[in-house]
Image 1 (cartoon, rainbow, N blue to C red):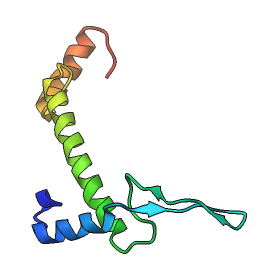
Image 2: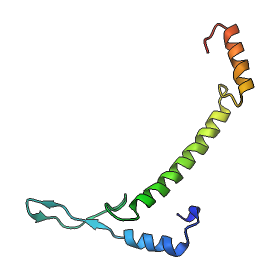
Image 3: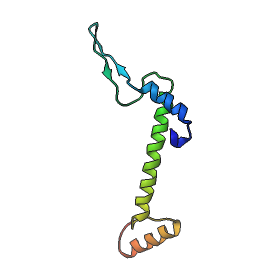
Image 4: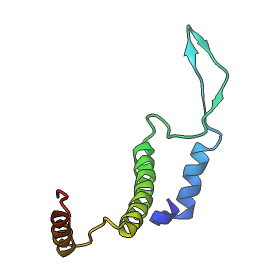
Length: 98
């Protein structure tokens, strides 16, 4: 959230909401002792979809950066249409299909 420019006070409020979260299990009219919730978002909580999206955006941005780095280092990577055309010509000469 901080990377997205959310003010520190708001980040602290959200952390406080999630700090020491617990849940209980109801089975045959018996309720369990509180069970700590260590990850995930609160079901039905109004901010849950927003928190999920912010987290997913962060993860996907890291994946995209790493994927771009990997692809740019790959000898099979073509950066533009000219390279793609040259690769097709080279493949045809060597008997490979596109």
